[in-house]
Image (cartoon, rainbow, N blue to C red; front, side, top):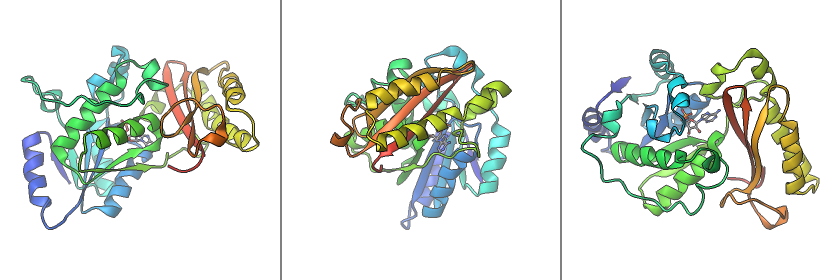
Length: 285
Ligand code: AMP
């Protein structure tokens, strides 16, 4: 496994690979890797000759300095997991490699309003940072395929839009959310949960499943959102939002018959840890 810290070294390697129709799959991560990340890597490994995983805790997407500081960082464990799964290339840049002090000519992208609801409303500036880093990393790696998790539904919708608007020569593949045995979506933040909060965290998945079943029984989205919020507000959980939205526009749904793709998305505080999850409750991505 090759580990590169400099853009120039990574690009010198990739230039040699990108001949003879060898395809490159790319998985951007912030490290503290778990089986969710590894599912993206495995999907890429099965489809491409070269898989590149980046580990970079991107400061520009954190709107809360404390959150950035406490974000788990486990580089040596990450490298051994990546070697074990058979990833060929790891990119571990410094902040100055990704954002050179002399500045970069980065495009501004009209995100069509996808950036405003849900995570966008609660984490101002977050998606501008995500778009900035993914655009920069794609410019460096020039991958054929980009792999992202459904776990961050709004994020993958925004990056899909960015790729279309900028006409980037890369195809986005969204990989299903990987869960623990009790349904909790795998997340780097899960290691920060206390045992009490961890015990109640599967309630996100339970509630999403209940909402999916209830929508199929013709319950109205509006009523379901209110009931879901109540279920996700307990001694140890504090719901921040529960939104039933169109899977393309991310706008709230009132008549579920008028949409072919509907997603329920939620963010819940479990103590100091903010958990997000979602479920497609009508249609397919
Ligand atoms: P992160 O390191 O949290 O920025 O995540 C890197 C990539 O892994 C993103 O595309 C996430 O959506 C994806 N990811 C994180 N958790 C999961 C999961 N439980 N299942 C599938 N993909 C995930």
